[in-house]
Length: 260
Image 1 (cartoon, rainbow, N blue to C red):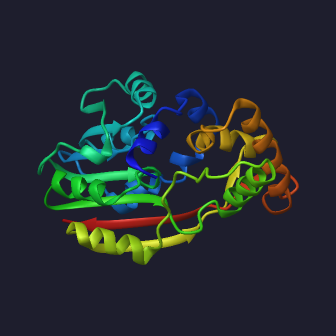
Image 2 (image 1 turned 90 degrees about the vertical axis):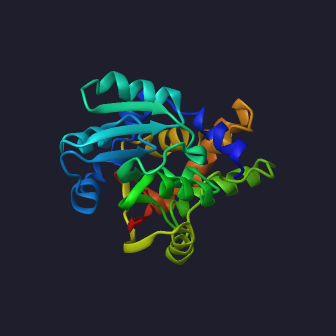
């Protein structure tokens, strides 16, 4: 995905739909705050790709001063309206052009970096933003993330005669991501890749996931093509991702704690 495509991805977010259908994104990562980053009172923390601000608010509850940034105006607006308290700020910011220099004790990011291809300049910006000794705690999609979902959509597009529409994410292997972090100057303290099968709520959970997270991927399609692809992809995915009671997406995550 080129940077212009990244910008297009930012414009396909619906904050209300995100909060209603995809609470698992932040609920499943609350321990990334408490057990990996361990924020302390008085610290200055940047939440990179803050979304609607649930984990940003958790960070601030430690007594730290927190700035949540996201490229989506809709997400930032929703976060600022939900969490207006002192010590917690939100701003629209492109992660590829972070302006901060040695301003933060820690940078936190959950389920955001896989939208930020290419990652090299993002990681360089995070490194610059940290004070010496500052830490970077993150979770993102890793190699193999939502592979079943992606294969179902790709097959559906192929059947519809749609070509040249690649997914917009970057899902690195642990070795690939470690190399990028080290190239940016970081020392890696912890790195963990793990499967996390993720329930997609309701009988329409698969389609709602694609509408919420696949919007930028499917944006080049017409409305009719998009509806046909989503419906057909659900049929293709059903034997592997529907367990008889609910949809379970094949999530694979990378968690990292690194230091400047």
